[in-house]
Each structure stands twice: as C-alpha cells, then as structure tokens.
Image 1 (cartoon, rainbow, N blue to C red):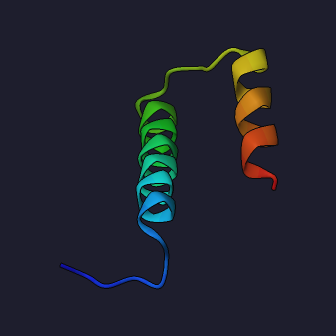
Image 2 (image 1 turned 120 degrees about the vertical axis):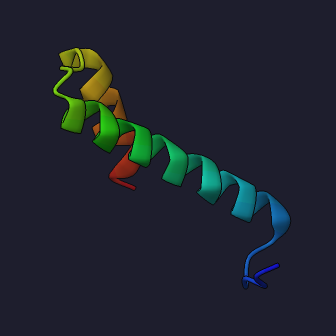
Length: 48
C-alpha cells in the first residue's frame, strides 16, 4: 500500500475527485455532451 502524506479522509476524497475527473474525461472522449449547468458546477468545484 502506498503511503501518502495525507490523512485518510483526504486520500478517499482525492480518489473520489480523481474518479470523477476520469469519468468526465471519459464522457467527453466518448462524445457525450454534458448540460451547461452541470459543466458549470464541475468548473466551479474544481476551480478551488
């Protein structure tokens, strides 16, 4: 198991974010369009 300098909750949260980003990239790669409001929410969420 990889030891990372984050508390456990941060690791699980980071993994969720990475999974969400990967799903978003995969969705775009497949050619599906997200609704503007959903994409805006994602942009706001990741522009921290």
